[in-house]
Length: 201
Ligand code: HEM
Figure 1 (cartoon, rainbow, N blue to C red):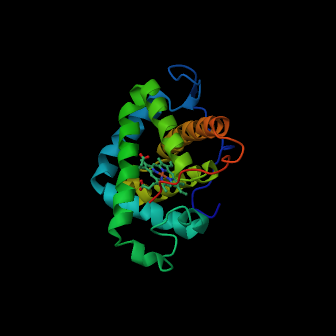
Figure 2 (cartoon, rainbow, N blue to C red):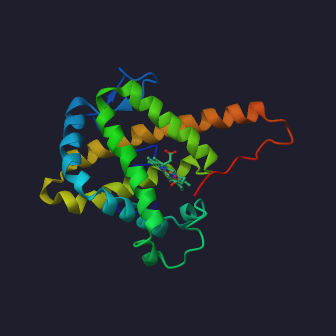
């Protein structure tokens, strides 16, 4: 993928510090307690700039993966990505995504609730026609965007912690997407199969 931070893809090495088990219903690898503490501490700094981070993440996502832009009705015909930096709609969208990250950070101590939330988000992305292979790009762009904000507070361990959290959330989103796909395929008549409701922007 064409972004600065690689290794967020499904096959990435999660590092030794992530934990597989436990509180989560699906037994997915999730951030360890040390990683959770690091994420929460850094979020206190990132939080002040979430509108800016949301815009940077999506403009960069559209630059590095133009195919993602096609998923958004409002943005698919925009040729000059610089114009998007001042778009109210992109700001609002970025803020919706960042609020989800905020909720996720708050729920790292209640993994069952976080899992339900992320799976539900995956289900809604099925209806937005946003395919799972794109989800990991968002974490990579988030990491690129927050690094300069945290300056010398950014460390390799913190990067690993955020990667682990995004891998965890996006795996759950993918699961939600797949469940919704299965349910819709099962419910639809053969003629209707493959036609999704599109509620995207
Ligand atoms: C970590 C990955 C992602 C997260 C956490 C995320 C989060 C969200 C959230 C919180 C919303 C608001 C609506 C809702 O709660 O259902 C949303 C909407 C949407 N997302 Fe995502 N998203 C991710 C990746 C993507 C990708 C990669 C695409 C497209 C390629 C995409 C396309 C959309 C669209 C079209 C909408 C509907 C428009 C809107 O509500 O602004 N998402 N996303």
